Image (cartoon, rainbow, N blue to C red):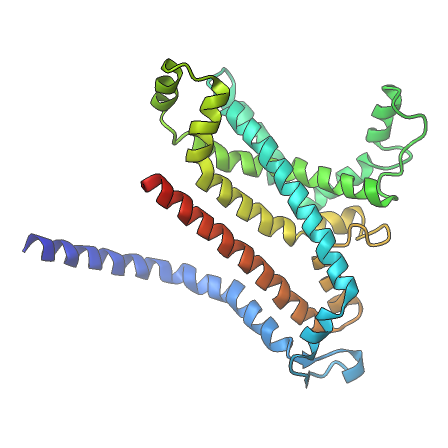
Length: 303
């Protein structure tokens, strides 16, 4: 009798929870699912200047065009390189900042607030600021290097492929590292301090405690942070658009800029929609892999 009553109460709670989630689900379907479905539909049509912007059913021709589009694969490589380097650097720096902010010291709350400011600022505004910093004639970056005696003439940061890539990665890391540190800090605060004290009594060093306690227990938060940042970095647009516009020579042109060019510059809406679908599928595969890693880590911890 008690078990049956408990199941009834649990089912009622789940039903109430579902009702409370319905508005959020409706909003997600409106702002997320509908654009994806619409893009899938438009990707089956040719709608460009050649068709006088009228949709003409083309089947899978847009997707076959993607397979032979060298420009797309080039931008995909640029996007992947940018995403991997940015996320790895942000994870390393974010972990270090989270470990510092997790320690008790005077002014810790103030420092936590200040540390999150770069992430809270508008990306386009930050990109404009970094464009001035990396200006080859009157930018602060070159001024610092000259004062240190490291260079005699200004570096054309945004005019050379390698330095432009370094500049946009540096700006992105500066902005989004606080987001990683915030997620990891929340995970660190959930780890009992007794574990570290007991392990220290056994003669473990702080470095050993980090690898054998902190990293294993923080692994789900690390994967979640990486998934969030992977999706954001893979779809980056505004920062690179403001700083380099994809140049020089396409060295910083990411997939989102290529999609934007096809849709807004060349008015090839059908092909741009197919590109959106392919990009979405790539992100979905990455999220599924990350989700499986989270489940595996949780099952390992439970065992």
